[in-house]
Length: 286
Ligand SMILES: [Zn+2]
Image (cartoon, rainbow, N blue to C red; front, side, top):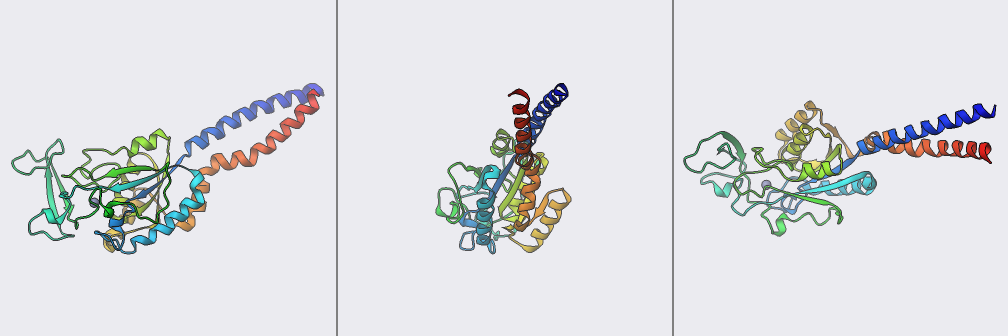
């Protein structure tokens, strides 16, 4: 009888080891980052490129942060950071108005064709008011958005001759920011995307994140769009590409899904398992 109980105990110990390894792996594989896209003065209603109700995203983002901060392995703030004569500004194109479009031509190295040049890429560029000029108050993060010393800041749009909606790549895909490397360093598998604007920088960041293999969630009420038509089509395209569009009220479910495999199992199963094994050990060997 003693032998049988001892065998059961030994098998249990091995199961515990296996369970520990599996749940640890699940915790590691479930790492999550919060991406806060371009929540800067320039995109607030009082900024140089105002997004309607852009300031309304701030309490929503702060709420998500307050409630789930300990579950984010990384929080990243992207920052639109332009030269004063940036190519995306309508002021740099004679006779063009803000919100009109133009075609920009690039050679195969990503150099803008300003005179004779071997054109390889034609990019349609929306022309914007001068905005988010680097080292100005306009380009600073909104004062009310919660930030911490451990947050990572990723600047984008700093090449003067090409725009960058995505926080990963410029609009031609010629150059890459450090965002993907930062996420991979922390073994991030899922990204929760918030910020401005839904139909441009959030949209292109989400699409690139999906293409790079991340599990992507866009929190719709933590974003706002520049224009209704492009916002509707951006949401539709993101859904079609398998990007999860959720509301902040659903974050509890989302975070539970993303972490339950590891954390919930660990906290709900381990104490019972450890208690049973501990009691059995005392009964057998003392
Ligand atoms: Zn910009």
